[in-house]
Length: 254
Ligand code: ADP
Ligand code: MG
Image 1 (cartoon, rainbow, N blue to C red):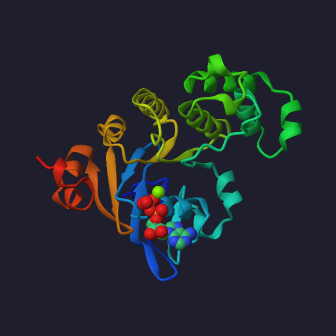
Image 2: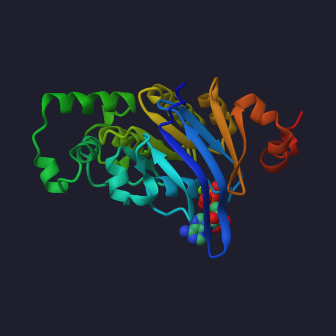
């Protein structure tokens, strides 16, 4: 009998900072193409978990395996990025003085350096890819605008587009809806839903309206004190007394 294949498996992870245990005996398994939402109160260890996946911090114990053959705990941040693991931070980190298309081009061109990338000749496949990403992220009409002039939500979409341009297989998205209007949030949900399946995605989020939008029929993981408190469909997670206790607050219990 074959064992189930997970694109990402984290087992027995512990991580302390100056004696404070941010991640505690964490086990987490993700299938290829999954869109998984991770929720949990502030300080639960959500961002630290992403830091451990991307090599920004190292686990004290445990292993994080990608595609069954890469031990992320022993690779550098750059090596992990090259495996196709891309991260979107909460604050957008786009090149504000470059246009939207140039930002995508820079990501697509990888490590050529800014000038070389801007003068780099695009193959027709590459320009098709940029056009496709511009459509996906709703920025086709803004392709020639400087990224610094975009609205907050548009910058976030551009950054997601940059992950697509760099061919990330696993997208790590930390609180994308923070600071967005309701309309931007809903569009972000549509975007992530359209990427699921083709990419594997971990989304950390607080906004439960957004969580419900992207999690229908999918698994949600609740982190608490560095461990998985519970995991399952959004409805059962939201009505789980343990979750209500630690996270959602009694006002949400009916
Ligand atoms: P979340 O994203 O769920 O709100 P974090 O992962 O950011 O939680 O933080 C979990 C805990 O670990 C917090 O108490 C935080 O202060 C601590 N922590 C995270 N990163 C570091 C670090 N680099 N140095 C010291 N403490 C840290
Ligand atoms: Mg966080």
